[in-house]
Image (tube, rainbow, N blue to C red; front, side):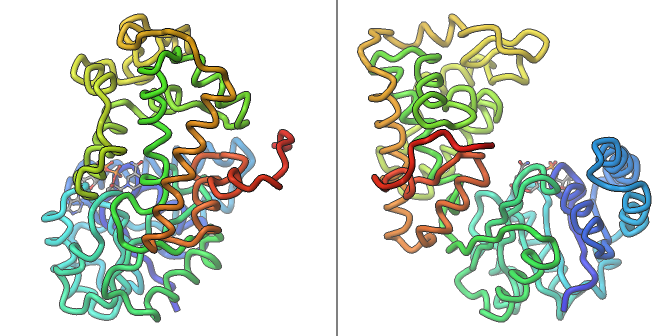
Amino acid sequence: MIQRVAVVGAGTMGAGIAQLCAQAGFSVKVFDSFPQTLADLPARLKSSLDSAVLRSKLTTSQAERAFQSVSPVQALADLAGADLVIEAASEDLELKRAIFSELDEVCPDAILATNTSSLSVSAIAEAVKTPERLLGIHFFNPPVVMKLVEMVRGAKTSPEVFQGAWDFVLMGLRKTPVDVKDTPGFIVNRVMRPYYLEGQRLGLAGAAISSVDDACRAEGFVPMGPFELMDLIGLDVNLSITKTIYEALGRPERFKPQFPQERLVAAGVVGKKAGRGWYLYEAGKKSGENPEAAALFPREGVLTPREIWVRLSGALAAEAELARSEGVAGKSDIDTAIKLAMNFPKGPFEWQNPSASTAKPAR
Ligand code: NAD
C-alpha cells in the first residue's frame, strides 16, 4: 500500500508530479540536487495551487492541505521510508543510474519509478540490485492536468510491482494508466512520429503548410495539425525526440528526420517560443505562415484536404499497427493513449474502422 511518495528532481515534471500526488492526499518528499530549484519549489507550488483555486479546480483548504503535504529535503538519503520513489531528474542515462544506485540503498523496500521519456527503463534498472522493483511511470506535461500515464514494464519488472504502481496511478491519482512494453518512444512518442514526418513529406509533395493543418482540423476533427503542433512543442524538442527514436529503432526510413525541420532548427527557428517556426507569431498569436519555412517546400498544391488527411491518418494507423504487432501495447491502450495525449477524438485503430462515426464529436 503506497502512502509516502518521494520525487527526485523538482523541475517541470518533478514539481508537477509532487503537486499531483499532494492533491491526491499523499505526503510527498522532494529532492533536487540543484539547491536553488529546491529552494524555489514552495513558491512555484504555491503559485500553481493558487491558480488552481482561481480556476475553481481546488478549494482554498484543499490547496493549503496539498501545500503542507510537500516537503523539500536536502539529500537523497532523506527520502528513506518512502513507499514509492518517482525519479524526474534530467534525461541522462548515467545520471539516472547513479540516482537509482543510491536509492537502492536508501529505500530498500520501495517501488522505484522513472519518468523517462526516451531512455530504456530496463537499462536504468541495471543500476539496482533488484530490478524487479523498477518500472517506468511516464506522466505527461502538465501532470496535474493530463489524464494519461504510460506504465512501462521493464524487462525484469515484477507483476506485483507493476500492479501496485498501476493501482496507485488509477485509484490513488485517478489517472488513466496504459500498459506499455519498454520500447523506444513507448506509445505516444512513437505512434505520433509519422504525424510530424508525414506532414513534412506532404509539404515536399506540394501541399502548403497551412493546407496540411487545415485539412487535419477539417477532415480529422483534431485540435491541431502537425505543423501547428510542432510549433507548440518546439521544433528542436520534437526533432530531438525523432532523432532518439530513429536511432533506437535502427534508423528505419520512415522515422528519418526531415530536412526542412533540421534546416529550421539549425537556424534557431524553433516554433512559438521563438516567435518563428512553421508559422510566425505576434504576442503569442499565429499570424500566418513563416515565409522562410514555406520556401523549403515546392508548393505545387495538387493534394486535396481529403488526400492529405488520408495519408496522415494512414501513416499513424500503420505505425500503430506495427507497434501493436511488436507487442508495444494493445489496440485499445494505443487508442486511449493517442486520444488522451493529443486530445484527438479517435485513436488510430478507431480511425481505420469504417463503421466508426464520422460526425464531429461534442467536446
Ligand atoms: P527539468 O530540466 O525541468 O528538471 C530536471 C531536474 O532534475 C532539474 O531541476 C535538475 O536540477 C534535477 N536534477 C538533475 N540531476 C539531479 C540529481 N542527481 N538529483 C536530483 N535532481 C537532479 O526536466 P523535466 O522536463 O522536468 O524532465 C524530467 C524528466 O521527465 C526527464 O526524464 C524527461 O524526459 C521526463 N519528461 C519530461 C516531460 C516534459 O514535457 N518536460 C514529459 C514527460 C517526461
